Image (tube, rainbow, N blue to C red):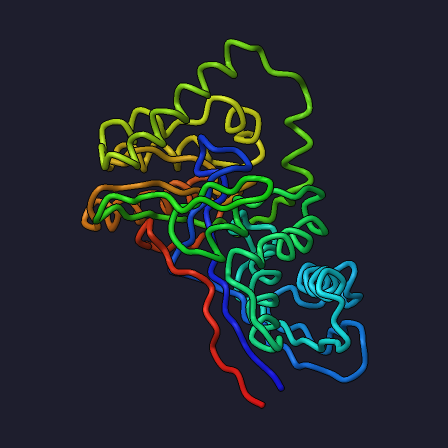
Length: 309
């Protein structure tokens, strides 16, 4: 028996919701083929795509492999899995590539179980994979990949959030790598309580804006006062790119996940089209080539592509 699944890229944090909020995008994706094997354990047979040679083949060190090891252990499965990974999301891009491989793996493997689990029940296994890459069990990428759209990802539960109709996102990825571990290192110094309170206010405004479909509240809340100021210097041209988005009518813009990709939200696709070109030009002025995508904020969930005996 074998099954294949695809998991989309995502925007982690959405600026104001560090380690808690994320949304999927219609753009690059990872694909994982999983075969059910009589022998126990997990084997990674192949990894393909840009940067594949740098990814570990040992299952306990690979996000997809670790996710399936966690699944086997939790369910005490008498059989094992062999997998092939096709990377479509650039490495260290801030687009959730490590999470995508784990999510695609558990979605495919779930189809091979005697009694497949509900999608939400796959969350802890995908988190186990994400932890291998980032060093922490934060679900801001895993959650939206599993369920689609905007998701509040807690320690043990996922909460899908409403998205006003028509909201779209621009994501621009410069030809630059920035590891999650490196980007988290700059956050170690303590924060002032006043800054924490101000960020909490922004987060509350943002969440209420989503719930009510109030674009003005979303705009008021979509600004990261804590993480972005410390990570921005790691991304050449970030301030220019963010400024280009805001100049073209963005509701807000910030780093996607740990960066270096930058995202911006817009009320209409027409605004997004013009902003995408301007954001890429801003990166070019900083000496960086880039690629970009326009996606609904309510992006796709991971999908099962095939399943055969």
